[in-house]
Image 1 (tube, one colour):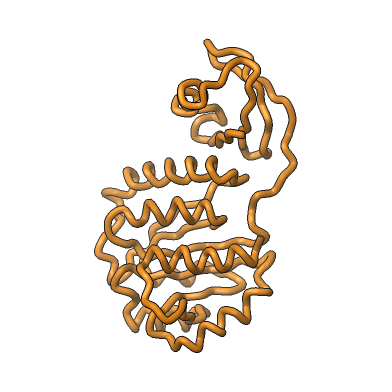
Image 2 (cartoon, rainbow, N blue to C red; image 1 turned 90 degrees about the vertical axis):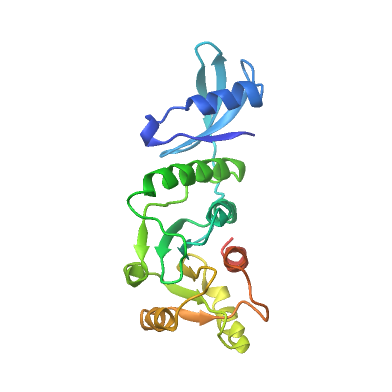
Length: 236
């Protein structure tokens, strides 16, 4: 069943792109049904008119496709379009919030000059990925911070993926996995060049637990998918 998110910015109405997708891509007709999500829940609706496009509510859908807990990804901005892929897959894997970080080794930067245009693209990716993966809520993406501001984001558990951490410290994260349900968890992932030692020490001072992701060095985006997948499995 196709699902569409109605956002406050559009007065909780379907966008023209949504209607185009319903009629031209999905080829729906009168009496066909689809799902909408708004601030009050998930609803099954039925098309009653094509021109103008109208629908009626059929029933509320009682389900929960969200994780049992809250995952916040603090992601140091990577090069190119990797960030698009990370946002898309983070939505699919159940992440609740992404905070983007301009770190010391981030080659690409997001500032006030390019934030609006980039966030417009990110918002579209979030909406489409949420609809495809049947999320009940849209992922939150509303900040770009400097690394020193990570201390503003409190959680029950905070992990930083660090490639120079002892491989034996993989055991560290394993000891937490069965205690994650219902908790807020921070995941801190570096850019292509990794973290500076000053950033690692600052993260440790602010309660982040250093963890290895295995014997191999992972790309920035792969580290995100690996750690999110592990946590989301134990928070389902």
